[in-house]
Image (cartoon, rainbow, N blue to C red):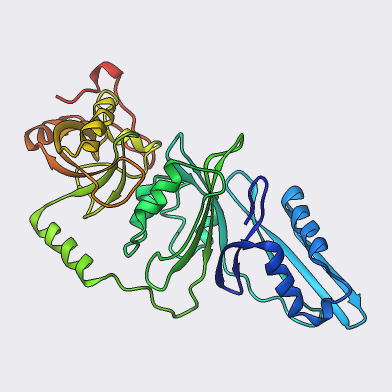
Length: 353
């Protein structure tokens, strides 16, 4: 995996390497390929990797040494802007067949818009079809694809406070017999303020996904029966980061141009101001207008509590309770709804009744 000024190894032979020093990994790879002696060196492999990155192209080499013939293949893994996020490297005897490459794709987390962008090639990953593909999605939408994931706070800390050099890697179930390896490197430079991602399909055919824990399943079912809707909020950024229960059915929280659109523009500052109370250990209750499934803003009661676990961010647990009279009233007007855009009447009519 690449960054503006560094390269690291994230996986070898399907096994995670956790951003190991690439030179050591290449040296071990060459050591397992006797035919490479006298023909390839770590420095020369580094030149190939930089060529793939800078020229955005595949490189194939066939060399003859005193111990035999060796071949090298290097293929770029592209992100949504056409940049090379990673390079797939294979070195082996010339008579060997190149193993089949499982799908991999690069992504970009943009902090300003709070969205993750991925190229259309992401549909090659198991778990993403053309029907549910979107070029940009919120972190809540991505988490929603990972039902058994439990490292949300670590991911949010890295994404919302990007420190150059910070990295994170994990394997996650993204559906039945679907397993992704996600490698994240924080960036804060002229190209990106946020992070670059690499997502690899690492689940062998027929492998089963990691089962969701008994406690998690039981609690979700209890909340479903009770009609409780809980989410994690980034109060400073006025966005929903993760649903702890089933999403509130009257709230349109996904397929938005910006995650902040879920809250009325005039209410976002109020939500951000609640952070000071939460940091002091206080609970707070307020009524905010949230985006409904027909693109009107409707009042919803929010009860906010500070997240008790470890996190560098001001995370809040929020309980969403509908104001039913207003939700019934808003059905009198139905604006046009598209997959990722709401079309409203003139601004002076946008406030809920």
